[in-house]
Length: 301
View (cartoon, rainbow, N blue to C red):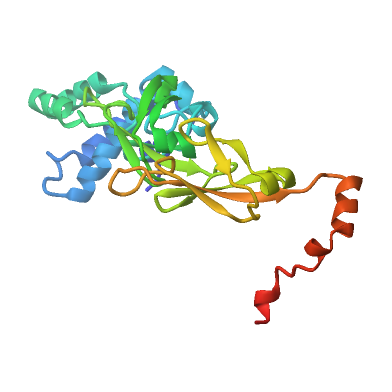
């Protein structure tokens, strides 16, 4: 099966409108259900030929197809789509155009009733279009609204539900490819992709992050500001805190399967000065108590 309407009708791209009409008449005579009743393959070929004619008989849509601006189903190609990934193609439905001519041709060949049936039979729902939407981890936790462009360059609002996960698909009614012959448009199917965060890591319903602290803050204790998905909070660091100590900040994590918020697990990392502090070096060298401690003694006990 091809998605090239020229090949479906068996005409070159240079074909005139008269040649295209003639080719469709020829196929209609061979494939119409009145000529070949109960022949499913012939019926499918007839529908495909009619859809191809509907596109090529519309000079404006034909020109867009020839320039590579639209696919065979009338949806924008990647270069013109402006947003996301799309699926589509023949025989999901060509762009609208030429349906009155189809009915006229069928009426001429098979009578008025066939023309009326043709009008009804080509009223088909448009193709669903598929998109991928990147969402920041914090956006996926909090939810919110994003503005995106869909087929035809139309900008729409998408409501991101709180707690959405990667792989979740949102269906936007009537935002897909246009229908054929007066049929309803398809839908837009938006798959959510949650992108990695620069300092949060998901752990089930919880989030983990590293909180850098200075040696002074670790030894003497301090209050440090820590970012959360809901804004910054003040975290109390007790005196004599080791690197790797984990503090639990309740209710500031991700969203669990039950819809409840998890916790933010903040791990301290002691950061030494970028260049040696002479006074600190002097104290450490002269303090016999510090130098006698072995933090790795448990490895050998």
